[in-house]
Every structure is written in C-alpha cells, then in structure tokens.
Image 1 (cartoon, rainbow, N blue to C red):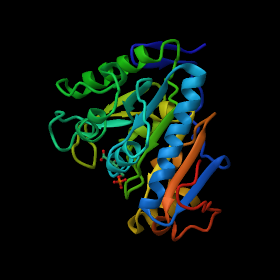
Image 2 (image 1 turned 90 degrees about the vertical axis):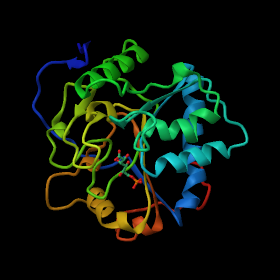
Image 3 (image 1 turned 180 degrees about the horizontal axis):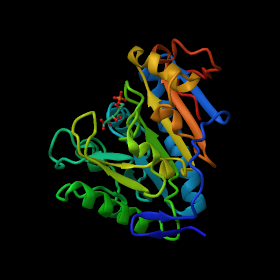
Length: 274
Ligand SMILES: O=C(O)[C@H](O)[C@@H](O)[C@H](O)[C@H](O)COP(=O)(O)O
C-alpha cells in the first residue's frame, strides 16, 4: 500500500528503471502554431467536460513559456467558457514574486484568471514569499489537500512545454531530479535556465496524469523534437521520459517543429477535435 507522508510518497523499494513510452503516443502536427490553437482549446474543453461529468471537477496543470498566451487566447475565444469547476495548478513555477514579469502565475493571472470565472480556491499556486524548500513543501501540501485520498495527484490534464535542451517542467537534462521517485513536487535551486530557484512537479506526478499534452512549435524545436521522439545517442531527455502509465500522451506541434520527424505524424487539419 502507498502512503503519503508530508510531501513524500512512502512506498516499497523497487529497482530504479526508467520506462520510456513506446506506443500510445499521438504526435499531431498543424500547419502553423495559429492553426494548432483551436485544437488545443478543444482538447482542454473535451477533457474538462469528461472530467466534470465523471468527477465533478476538472484538474489542469499549466506550464509557462509560449503556452501562456496560446492557451489564454484560445480559451478566451471560445463562445462559452465556464471555469467554475476547474482547478488550475502549475506543473512548475519560478520562485519570484507574482508581480515579477518572470512569474508564470503572474502571467496567467493577467492573461486568463482575471478574465474567467474561476474561484480563488480553484487556483493552486506556490507561495513565493517562502524559501525554495519550504515553498515546495507548501505547494505539495496544497496538492495533497486538493487530491484527498490520492497517493499521487492524478490530474485530468497537464499541459507541458519543452525547452531547446529537452527540459520540461523544471526537469533539466542530467539533473538529479530526473531520478526523483519519492516527492510529488520538488524544489530546484540550481536551474540552468534562470531564474535558478523553482518548484516543479516530478515524474511520478507527471506520469500519473490522465492526459498529458506537450505544445511545441517553431523550427528551432525541430532537432530536439526529433531527438526526444525518435531517440538519440545519450540518456533519455526529460521530455522523452514523460510517459503516463494509464493516460494519454499528445505532442501538439506545428509543421516547422515536425520537419525532421520520420515517425508517423497525424495531420488532421486546422481546428481538428482531439
Ligand atoms: O519556466 C520556464 O523556463 C518555461 O516555462 C519553460 O520551461 C518553457 O515551458 C519551455 O522553455 C518551452 O517554452 P516555449 O513553448 O515558449 O518554447
């Protein structure tokens, strides 16, 4: 039996094996980032409808980068958007104050939260006044409280980005946090990408989700996308380690990002429902 104590998952020891996703992954390409947007919105709202009808709420993990503006714009363009039963959390967050332009929460507050009917209780964010280790513990407690009875929070949907080095969340290539198996969220104080202090979901949490969708666009992502999806020489990059055990995995990309891929890529056309 698994137990959650503090912000650790207490479970029997087992060999450390990294399982890399082989099947059940959908790589979906759109002609451009603009044409990807409506399908991203449809993925979010279809998973929201399903989650609310099954469990009475929709739990959504957010990431930063270009996703903030893409997601906010597409959701706000929908004719009807009811976020009263949505619970937003952050796949990772930079430890800066909310009014700092680097704050992912701050960007979502300005671009999305302030414009939709989400209650304050529907936003799980870090407390940036805390030191990084306490901040991670505090954020962990919020997740544990929001997912009662679950050893690892099972999000309905996590939206992820991928950096040019293959990082996702604040899980960077070669970093010891890639091997974290006990904490559901962790502090990082030596992020190679500034700011150095962050709080991040770990792979146990990411890979427990019902659905994970990467959004990655632009020609600059083509080489790293190929390495992540088709394999490279070295150890698996962080983004390649995202493999939900019981969930769906989507890679939503545009044609410039997909340009070097030789694997099967779906090209359903602009606005396709996923
Ligand atoms: O905290 C961060 O530093 C960013 O959130 C970062 O992890 C971002 O998600 C990726 O670099 C992808 O960003 P783009 O989608 O903008 O390329």
